[in-house]
Amino acid sequence: QLLVSSTIQAYLDPLVAPIMASFAAETVERWAFFVDWYDANASLTRTYTLIYYPNSKEVEMIDNKSRRSFLRKTKTDTLNPKVLTVGSSFSLLGRQLTVKEYADAYTKKTLTSRTEKAIAIINEASLNQMGPVLTALAGKGNLILNLQLINVGAQAQSALSQALEVVTQGQALLIELTSDHLSQTLSEASSLAPSFSSTTTPEATEMAHNLCFGQHRFATTAVMSNSTLGIIKPHAVLEGQLGAIVGDIQAAGLTITAMHSFTLDRANAEEFLEVYKGVVPEYTSMVTELESGVSVAVEVVGGSDVHGRFRQLCGPMDPEVARHLRPNTLRAKYGLNKVQSAVHCTDLPEDCALETEYFFGILLE
Image (spheres, rainbow, N blue to C red):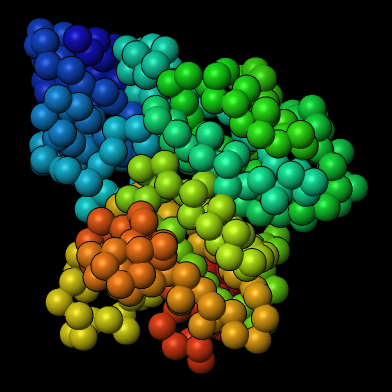
């Protein structure tokens, strides 16, 4: 049962307060959060109170500035409750929202007791083990919130060493994750990669988050030349297949030169997939899938025909066709259907630079 704090009740207007006050009298489970949405048209960050009903998968929102209902209770099957943790971003009804804080003591106590958060780093000496380590980190009960491949220089090494025990200079993969069994997860990952380290306290995790995924961001490692783009789709990330896909890319003799997690809003997803509009009947569903959660973009290099090699590795667009004709491809092994096909790859070689620039240039500006 959700008990909403008197502070929040006082803050909301009389039209909304009765809804919130009724929480104490009902037995329906509700979680409340303060979330931000950046309104690009107005160049403003707007704050809402988001209320999620985990049993019925319904959501409602209150505009904190106007103190009025912004979204009446609406059923949503696309919102994964695992993403409802402080610092995470997700897409809801075409808006990219970021959880800033739990809106009441009950939600904070309930959710923080179920899951823990950490920042991990795979240093350069162990990057050839990215696949198995990511599989351990993104396993059952775990969720990848943020991820980026970075270059660690002397200054970054000094800063990161305040929160992480082992940080070496060179390339490194930073991962922010939440887990129902964090200690076991990190222990398993550490056993797979000698040059692996993670935060061990909530204070260190908060410090590392601010350093790595807060307002400060590391520069991309993308080379933007003789490379191609791959996107590991949200359903595959959510299902814990990120590590297996990365491992297969490396096993194929291809090199990942840049990697970054994204949570796209609908406008970005539509813009990126616009070439398919009116061409494939699944266009709208493809947009919905791409904006549904965390995806991971990778820049891949591997010789003059890297575009062709990576497309061959991905396989036919329809996973059912792939399973019959090319069963060892990524879509055959990890795809579910034409929309949830596990990975996106660039169709035409002349579009490689454009698509890579979109993710590792434009979206990171």
